[in-house]
Image 1 (cartoon, rainbow, N blue to C red):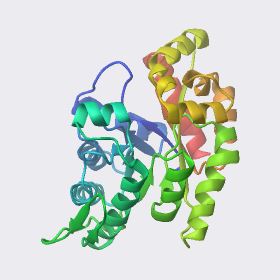
Image 2: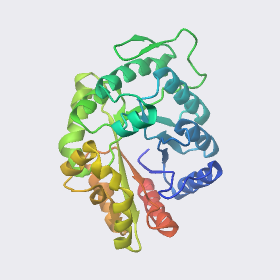
Image 3: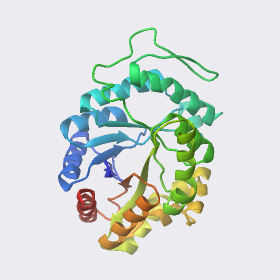
Length: 309
């Protein structure tokens, strides 16, 4: 899996049938993976399982499920089910989420998030590998009093990726996850801060080099200026979130829209190379429909060519 896209739109919620059609289009274009965000609407692992089963050969993943309001036993069951349904093509993405959504949506205090992430991953890994767990932490307990393995769900074990960009979450991810899902982290932030930190943590823990799946908003645009304006509006919410403010600054930007790749085919191909040179093992483009359907298809056609090259 080298180049993928998110299978969603920025303006409306797609039906399941429409999402499957979009996934088939992505695969036909030559793209290797399709990703789904987790909202209060569709359950992303279930949607990934449906799409992955309908579109053979397409890797599917979630980016990302917040650990607040979830439990490792239930997330493991979801992930193993998706893995079994897709024949081993599912990738689980986890995140801390935001204080606002956690406290206002779930009514759960957003306390000790990094500690919760560490305990969540510690409990989850054996569940995904063996269907068993006996973990008793400060913040959660995960014990398999009943069988928790799904036939075909651990063949191979579900890869676990974390939407990590800060020093503490990068350390935990390097030690306990298979990789990371940085969003709005440009090549400079990846090369100078993110990749070295998570790689060092993985090496210290005796783990393989982590996957770096960079999520990047981008469009091959007919009217670049209009798409830049649309990107500024669509991405504005990230300008007020401290973790994103930090990584945007480390990337050399002042707002989230500065990290959007908007231009012609040559510009986008050059940016993909920059991300790979910065340490990204995979690049997933988001918000590719900001310029409309014609630009989205043009974008996917280029990305498919790059994936095949």
